[in-house]
Image (tube, rainbow, N blue to C red; front, side):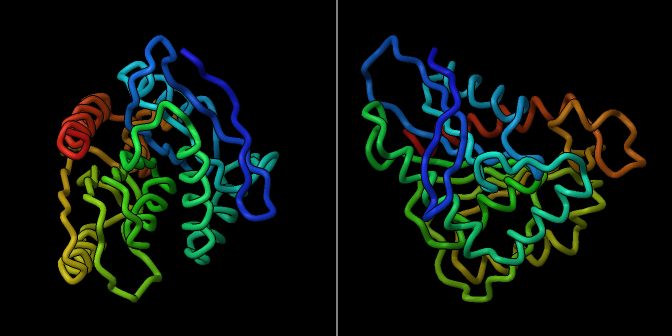
Length: 237
């Protein structure tokens, strides 16, 4: 397996992502953009890239913030990620440029690109879908579902939302608004909700204290990963 830091450009910004893929075969394969949580590219998202590579995908961790820009704590992460959610066009541009970088790989099967994201990254991949980009599908893991985009243009990508029922940061009212929006945009979407799960249910670093609003849930983590794989089987068949 090749797994290494990977530089690419987004307009005049140098980004440092992370790429992983198997090179033992020259068979062309789908590519997956992996968008990290608000802390940026780190060990968690790199592990996800390697896991996807072991399953036969090319996985590229997206650097939304730019090379060397890494929040030092939750406060910095909240401020930085909020600036991108408020400027959703720039957020989409970061993902689109990462997608162009992914398209440069010879092993990529043309037209076979998907995207997944965690927390802030989940919000980001939904914005990619809202852009109307012709990607096969996107998967949001405990991501925010609201948007500042009021265009209601048709959505081309298939969508899978993996959501914790008890997530206090993405309440059911936001889920209901998302359903209404997706219906208006004539999207092909599905929402799977996991009982006893709050925000960040895939991240062991979130700990086990549900009262904080973010906590790891092993069962929801495993189920959502398997649901993602079934979704990929459908969109990449």
